[in-house]
Image (cartoon, rainbow, N blue to C red; front, side, top):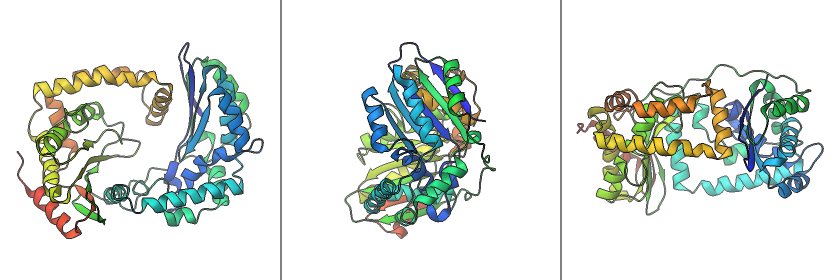
Length: 417
């Protein structure tokens, strides 16, 4: 029941492997957020045959490394040693032992890190923003949990999560390197011959809140305020995906300082060094978010919010001028494919093809779609997917919840350009 996708690259110096297990932190119990993350992150702490030190001793001479997270395992190694990498990764996949002492040590480290994060305005404001957008849905919970939830996770919970959820029906293997796909297939068939089937995933939970204006503040006495503004976004399979990537590059993710938000809020008004916005990057099987971010001084927060909403309205109300559109498309056509030269990027892309049911030649079609995008397409997509009058806004810094709500409501009522 597992899927295998391979991208052979003759002469590639590195072999990259990704083992993606569908479900991730959507399968966490509400009171034990972080279970899926720790199940993957601590799989490399030992197996029935090798402890953590032995695994490292096998990988290091070959320049190899393996790590895990809530969605499985990823690894790289020198190209000729792909069998060693697959040996160890399938061993970690099938029989992690979760030894008590290393698991407890790593769990305490995560608790310590989360404790420090509690005082970080940017991290906490980002989490507040996702809660505003997704509510109590699992997408609104932190992947690596909270101090309270991680403190309640025990070794037995990781063992149980692995046993229940890490099965072939949910798993995709992606391999990129100087390899023969048939040889990889035969090798994995032998290695995984005894792997038992487990339950498939149930239907996607879509119980997130309806779009609407919502605000929240993480109070912190700092010199800077972190502001996140946005709303529910799109799925990866949305037919406007390519058009919205172009829109993102015009609005808030263009190279250098060429996007509108950078020019207006950073260069013209001097509000911040870092400012960006994007709707396409987080698109997945479930909807991602449209998210705009700026770090600015407290007195400039109202101006920043007005600037975000004003530029969103302008994307909806006015066709993109020919020079801006051409700059965004030229950059994408010239740079997008370059990212696929790295083996790690390729295996991530291969996994995405399977997860979203996309064709093998999708990237070729995507480049053609970029080239075909018109100003009318961008305006239509912006009207369909940007909601300047129904944004969630979270801010972290020395300001009050009442002031933030007042500023957002005032800016939301402002007329478009």
